[in-house]
Length: 227
Image (cartoon, rainbow, N blue to C red; front, side, top):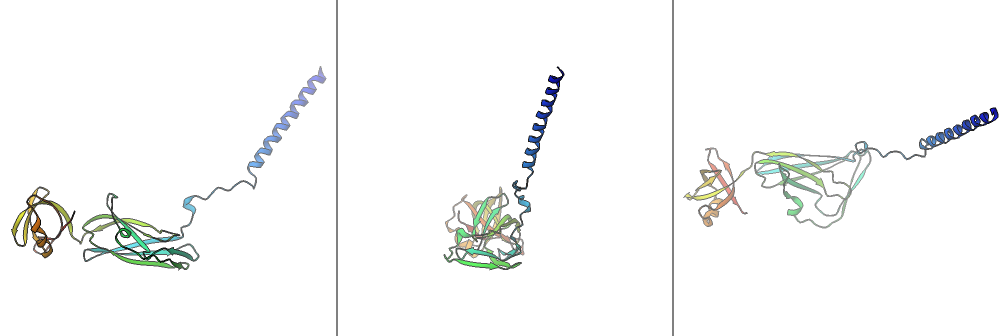
């Protein structure tokens, strides 16, 4: 009886040892040097380029100076498939797309490579015509195969024309018309271009126009816009 009890204890100890050994082997394999390293988080990947732009209002337009800097620590190649190296999209302050430069211009098909040295910069200056008073979102980016270097931010235009819409009431004199805007009938002076446009207007026609106030406080319509 004692022998059977001793054999049962010995067998239990042997089985425990085998199970413990298996568990240790499994843990060793999980922590071995052959395990795959985790991919770095996106925030840990260094950007190759930094970009920025400055704006300046001038002559009812917005001048944009866009700069891209190579921050990778080594030279970088940029490949352009046409003459348009920089593109932009202008949105209203709610994010609705208003216009895109590449939709308005034709560019030559010519492959060109630009190499930026370490800390080198690529600069491009352009003008956005006929941007009226208001708040916008401007997005500027490269058209290069390797990198967009996109930058986007809010801009305000305050020194251009104001855009408005209303109903055409009638002509007061050769250089003055009356329009109903936001429920109020108001007299507007006319530029030479605007005066030529009103010949085809009918009473109560809905019109859209751009205007400025002169030194006398008079609202002067620069032109009527076509729908």
